[in-house]
Length: 457
Image (cartoon, rainbow, N blue to C red; front, side, top):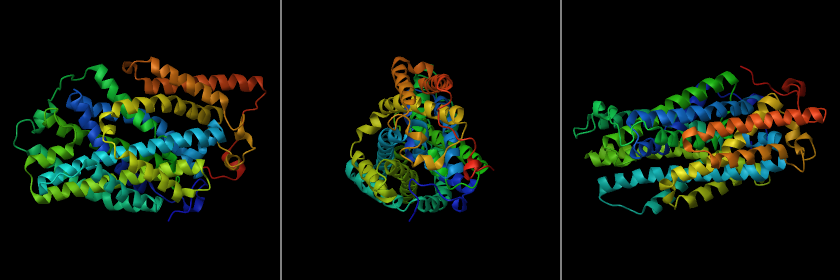
């Protein structure tokens, strides 16, 4: 059972290397939910290659912020949500960001569970001729996944090591089945030339870039959670970026391929495969990969959500906070409408998280120059109290960014635009006000001067 919740991980326990981190992040990126998103993009009208490109581009946009936040975990051993106390104020971090992240984690837990449950239903119908309730399967599946997350970071690394090779082999075999199926539309040449009803139309393409970027912007603070056991920044950069690019490409390719092969009629690859007339062994393999896929990603969803809630209710601790988030995610898994309303949900998340993350990173990189006073994070009367526990300027620019987000069309890619504009506006305003107040903005000259690890490679 993991011991560390909101407190920093000691330096001697930060031993995770890039290949361990690669397995964790790759397993996160190669999952039924992201595979489904690739299929949904094709069903919406995008061509095969446009759907794959939109998903990869959205992740690249988000991971430009994600990897910056990961340095907080590497350098200080902190959960990302706790580090936001330095940028937004202790009270704002606890009562605003923690709640937002806990809700977001519960949403993603439910979305992933439903995506996997839809595939399980298709397998059971093709194999046994039965079709149980989607809600019932989702709830049982959710409980099984949540049980592993309660054990903490150790369960993540163990599960990733076990699942990684098995998933690769089974998904490779399932892709081979798709590519060699004799029905019209399944051959690689046909799928790769599939143009869809919208092709590369920018208005549709931009919607999916924004949706994917919003999905990962809502999880930027999680980066530090995954990386706070990492040995060095070099390990973090290699493991995280390689896994993000390869895992996203694999998910998008697999999901878009199945959807394009069905001529844009079926979004979920794990519903397409059981309909190919495959045997019992293949159907069992589909079940195995669905369980492993969902387990690896949803353990992380609940784990990071638990850390977020622990930042709010510190007396609960990581275990009980994780249990609360797991219960909320399980309850949400009873609402299949989450799948149909995916783009609307992502728009709402983008509206909240894009400006907030832009401001957060601007404060970290520009105002504090990448340095955090760790003891002050736990001092309610220290420099990170700001005004009543709130960095009013940071929240003001976040609110302005949210208003601007509503006014912008999808075609201008509002996620990166609003994040950048909010961050730049905040940094400039903070510098001007700081100069006028003769430098009262809390700063730390260097981590080493506080006796803290720098986490350099």
